[in-house]
Image (cartoon, rainbow, N blue to C red):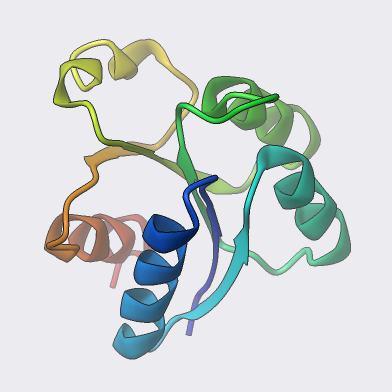
Length: 118
């Protein structure tokens, strides 16, 4: 099964996503910020998808995605946002998909399946 990295500075959101994706059968690693996410990506080259919040302190999700593209170009990236108004802007950003965060993670799970061609 696929390995997914979830990066979000909000612990409750990150852990909810991690738990739901693990229940679906994915192996999930989580990180509280982009800096830790980059460390994990350097250590583990078998991560298939990175799900990252856009608005985080220190390094934003946009900057994080740029670093991923520069250093690990083959990784799939899903931007997670609580703000639906971003979705219209995100088409030009460095991600493979965009999901508005909600308590129902069906859209995220479907997006992951589509990116993995499952």
